Image (tube, rainbow, N blue to C red; front, top):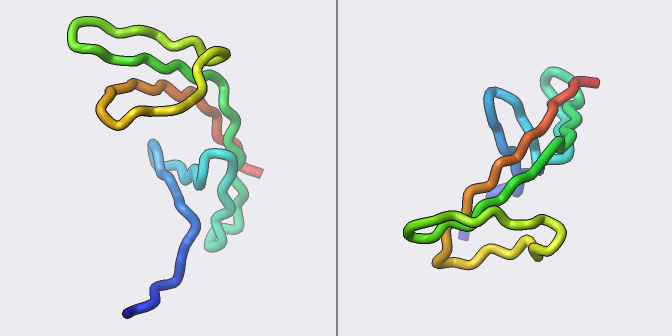
Amino acid sequence: MAQFPLEDPDMELENSHLGRGSGYYDETERRNYEIETLDISVWYMQEFNENRLCLEEWKAQFHVEDAYIVRWKYKVSLT
């Protein structure tokens, strides 16, 4: 069985590397990107309506056969 080197996950949105969502260090450019979460909104979608979930009460658990919309507002800063 072939062994491939494991790399850290790197989510990329709008041409910005976000890593796992908290920060990312770009070794080629030697830049550190810091990600700050500004707001999170979650909607649970049903066939004919949608319900906005209260983040204080919601356990942040998704179910396989359900549909959700997640809006994540974030800010990327270079250090």
